[in-house]
Length: 312
Image 1 (cartoon, rainbow, N blue to C red):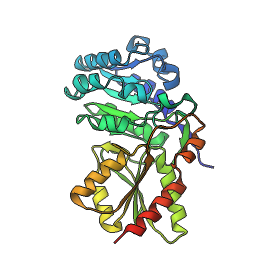
Image 2: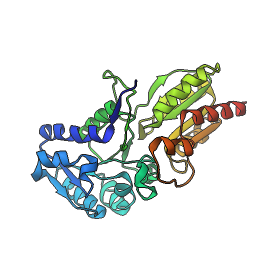
Image 3: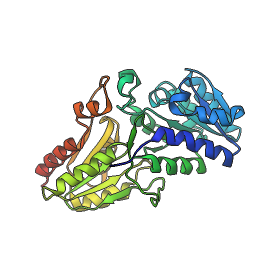
């Protein structure tokens, strides 16, 4: 059975460990600290934790001030509240100044589940991709989350790390070497390039196994870093396969599919199919929502077959 690990809990535990390593590390939280596990940092370092309640604009502005003062501030809340509400503060106060603010936001995508549509963050990649200074990382599992957070704290500059609510399958071993800006080729194939991130990476790997049974070989790329995008990895793969399918738990508009399509249009035109959301969803259990909104490995297989029919 595949191990399941909560990326938000990994983040909460790791921030405590990093707090002992980096004396300038501080955490700025809202009223969701128990849900994001930022309360663990608060318990360990009460003088380095600042709770602003549901005031995300103030939270980001203070984080910018802390960064300008030489601290390493981590902003912790739900993804929908940490990207959409304080967009102006992120744009002017953080991105334009290239300040060393780290957004480590949880409950991203569709899988807020029973919390409902108002808590579903399905526009966040589009929002944050519009801010040129931000590095954007979407880990696929617990091990990648730990490596991504460590790398983001070590680098200078604004970072957005997108984490999920539920425990999700572990697809990486301890030997995995994560590098910001470098795509990970999970497997090589000749017929299609499947590009994914986050929880959809596991679905992409399952789809590749199903496609093997149909005689279709797939390259599966983990595009954990959305910005900066690993253009070379995509172009190298599509030059071999001639077809791209993207899979994401985000709106197609402005998400990974749109970003990859723009790259292909400029450098290597090829058929592309996109598995992703086309509108707002509703409340429900994670597995129910993924099935209803066509975000399963079966839907990836369907898109691959559709794309193969379009290949010249």
